[in-house]
Length: 233
Image 1 (tube, helix red, strand yellow):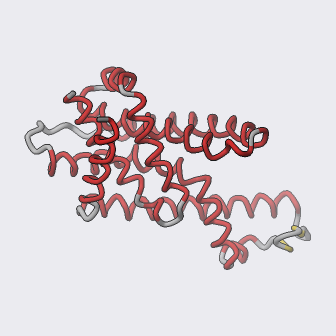
Image 2 (tube, one colour; image 1 turned 90 degrees about the vertical axis):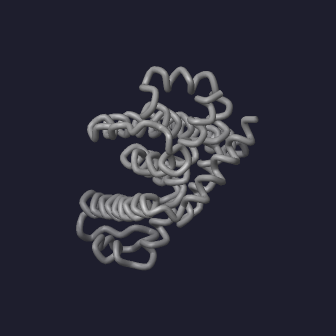
Image 3 (cartoon, rainbow, N blue to C red; image 1 turned 180 degrees about the vertical axis):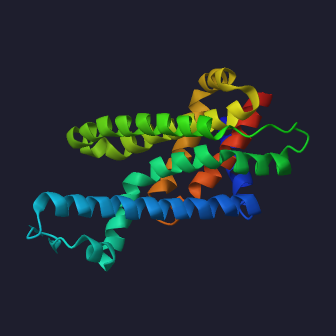
């Protein structure tokens, strides 16, 4: 039952990927992702340049000329690697800030009899995003210690942890649009294994460059379907 619900929800989300509102969120997500990666790398190069001084050399990069390095081919490779670590926080931000657009598109197509709901206020969405990012960063920081001491278990820890956190966030955001924060938390607790499994499904492609740009939209759509399926049951 749970697996059927997850797969059906995911396939329905894929079937709607051409929706105009999905495309809008996708392009916003791409712009946000590129801006974040470039800004993060530029800040890193500036910091190295500032701390090391004008005559500094790095074993790998040579002299740090951060504007030139930012525009170099090696920067593109570095940012792809950086995206592996930053994509899950970015996915969270995209989901939090633009969930209403994706969820409303899903409900308009698949649940047209539902009453309309007001948008989540911007500052409420921003608060939820910042709160979740803090939890995500803290949890993954602790997980790095486990990666060092138990290397063979690293993939299981990574996907298990982030699947749990993503499932928790995506479902909470989808559910509280309709039933409020407390009822959403209660429903999430009742169906934790299903939500966790769906979160792992969402986390797996997030480590694949390019594909990970589409996953936040599919995640928001999938968990909207999952919420309605669990809420009916």
